[in-house]
Image (tube, rainbow, N blue to C red):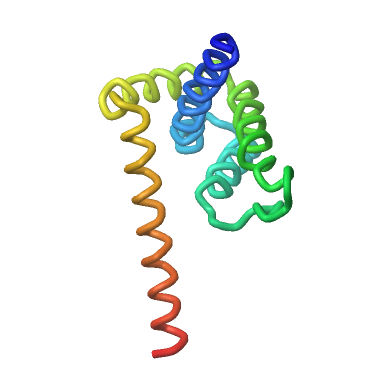
Amino acid sequence: MAGVAAAIRGRFLRFRKEIIVVAYAIRNPATPLRLRLAGGLFILYLLSPIDLIPIMVPGLGLVDDLILVPWGLSRVVERLPAESRADAEARAASFIRRWVRRPLVFLLCLVLFLMLAWALVLGLLWWWLVG
């Protein structure tokens, strides 16, 4: 059981790094446009409250968030040019060392920020439509 927990923790830490690597890579002009678009779409989908497979579907609701997005981001990172990937990985490691000392606290802060951002967007949309 400890091996499974270690594998899940290792995958979570690798996924965390891949998100940041892709975020830096899409801003690098040396990254091909198709990888920039794919990486940007995966990150936007991850931040979006809309799911391809609704969470209410038993068993399949979390597949897109737990399997498809990490798999897609891994494929984008694997296909990055060596120079672009090395630069993005160095910047991501620096970001993680500086800002992510406690992963769960960072994750909680990120989730709260996303919830507030979406609440603000929906509130402004409501105000614009009704007001």
